[in-house]
Every structure is written in C-alpha cells, then in structure tokens.
Image (cartoon, rainbow, N blue to C red; front, side, top):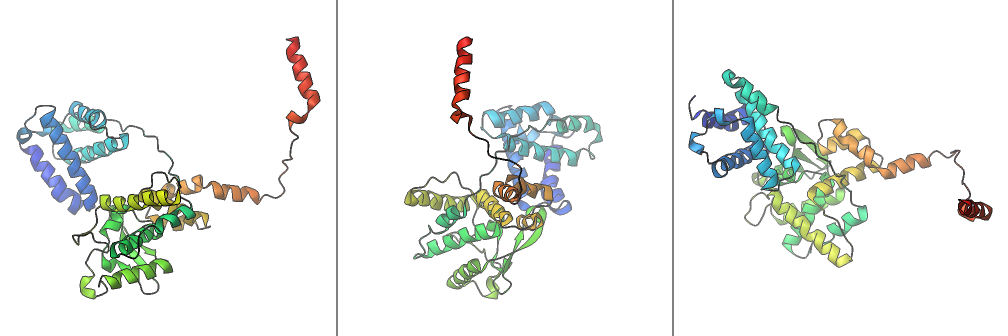
Length: 339
C-alpha cells in the first residue's frame, strides 16, 4: 500500500467530498480539520510516527482509541468534544471504505468504537428582568457601546447561534416592514426570523451611523470588529461576558454563567411560555426535528403550573397538620416508651 494514500484521501475528503458533494458547512469542515490536526499531532508527538509516511493501514481502532483517551486525560476535553472528534474520524472512514475494500474490516472496527454517553445538564433560562439588566449595560454614549447594545438585543431577539450571528452580512437584514433577518444555519439551511420594532429601530440607527445603508456595502459584515472583519464566536462571547459581569457587579446580583447559547435558550423559552406553538419555536431556532424543540415543552414549569391551575374542580382537599394533633403526639410518645 502506498504511504501517501492517507494524505491523498484526506485532502480529497476535506477539499472536495465534504464541501462539493455533501454541501457541508465551512464550520463543520473547519471542525474536521481541527480533529485531524490534533490526531496527526498526537501520532507524531505521542506515538513517534512520521506524519509524512502515515498510511491508511496505520488508522487502526487501537490508535484511534488511544487518541480519544489522550483527548480526555491529557487535553482535559469533555466527553462531548471526544464524541465530536470520533464523529469526524468516522465520517472519513465511511468515505474511504468503498474506495479501499481490502481494508473494509479495519474501517468497520473503527466505526464500531462506541460513542460515550453524556449527561446533559439542563440549561436554566434567564428571567426577562435579568435579560433587561444585561441589555442595559452597554454605555450607549460611545460608538462601541452602541454597537455592543445592538449585538446584545439582536442576539436575544433572533435566538441565533453565535456562529450564525458572526456570519451575518448587511444584506441579510431587512429593516423595511415587515422587518426580518435571513440566517444561514446548520446544514446550510436558510431561515427567516422576524425582528421586533425596538430591535429594528436600534439596528436602523446602527446602520445609519456606520454608513451601511448603501447597496454597495450589502456584503459587509453586519457586526464588525475593530479590524472591520466578521466577529469570531470568541469575540462575541467576550462581549456578552463583559456585560454580564458588569451587570452582576452594578446590580449586586449573582448571574450564573451566561453564554450566547443560554441567551438563545432563554429566548426560546420566553417565546414558548408566551403561548406560542412549538412549531413556531422550532422554526425560530432552525431545528430540523420537532423532537429537539420538545425540550422546551418538557422544561417549562411555568406552563405546567398554569395548566394545572386551570383545573378548578380539583378533588384534593387540605389535610389538617398532624403536628397539631396533641392526642396523636401523646400516643406516639407512649408507644415509643413501651418499646
């Protein structure tokens, strides 16, 4: 077997198969590149293998399992991240096995490496008061503060994923009635999300101030960093974290760890608790399967309580407290003494 077959197939997998034949998003391809960068680095540094001579026959289930163990023990990656790296390797194995049938059994053994089960911690949504407190934090007397204020209200109003917000261009928003934004989500699926009047006004002021309302700037980033480029997810997380921390200090409240995903989850929960159908919440979030959105119906304690309160003819009666029954207490004391 040629020693360069792995490099050939990996190049074709990342450069042709995923983007052109599978129409996979750039973010997914970037994640897969990171996986193989880490994998090959592990093979070189920990296994003493020469990367330039790495071959498909070297891609054994034993090597992959040691790599996954290294991710957890040495890099301290979560089980979820470990599973994502395994998914990338599995995708490559599925791609290459029809082209190398002689190694079919080896690839099947790689594919048989189990996904580890993860315990998903429920995301606690913020109250509307907590969201309002965070949104008030940016100093709108400065240009940067006004930009950050628009970013925060846009993040909440659209319930967009952080990467989706980073990718937005000026041409993706419509400020004329009915105002909306086009969001390219997972799997390159486009969805249109309506914008509320307050967000539209904030956005219009922002676009006007930054001279972005001209047609020739429609391809510009909607939210640009100091270099004029699209924000990175880390950049947007930093902005949110900065104002969450300042809100906690200013108001004397304790806000738990708030991320863009928490804001997304909060908007979805607020939308559902306002009496909207789960179908609308699904479309707002860009979920493909309604089962994914069903978590909001399961988690909404407020709506469960409201549903129970509507049953006005409940047969449950108030039971007198046994603590007030002195005769019973005396009986229990005497019963215990006899023992």
